[in-house]
Image (cartoon, rainbow, N blue to C red; front, side, top):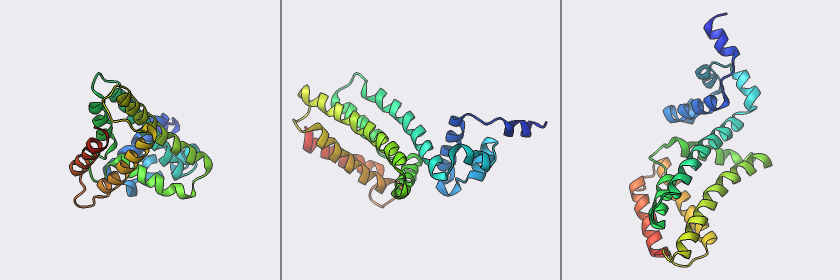
Length: 199
């Protein structure tokens, strides 16, 4: 048996497939992500990939869940630092907002959101779980700042919903490349909003 045949018979770990999918999105966008191409990258046939993921929608959602698990660990690390609530809130915003036009994580997010119009209940619940984790961490941070007197007294849950809506709107502008809404401008807008609303 040739090395290539052996490699194709041994399915790579799921994480390796998801990492390869994310690398493909980062390198050439979603247009470059095909089951055949991904199969070549990881040494599997497209049929083998479909056996594990069933559809491209499922592959994209699992890739997003994998990416979000990594970002969630990073977010929790940032929010558990010994720092002021304001500093940790700035770190949360920095992590939330796309790095640049065509940010691969946000590109994937937008595609999954777009496809969710026809998603089943399970897929919607999994997407909602990702949203809840960001929301829950922000609510906890706001509640901490309010209880310590660092932030103005607001309803943490309602304020978090509004702040995340603002972040989502600006983030879409950044990732699709709308002129005048680059990352630096967005961060300034959001920080001004936080100062006006919470400090």
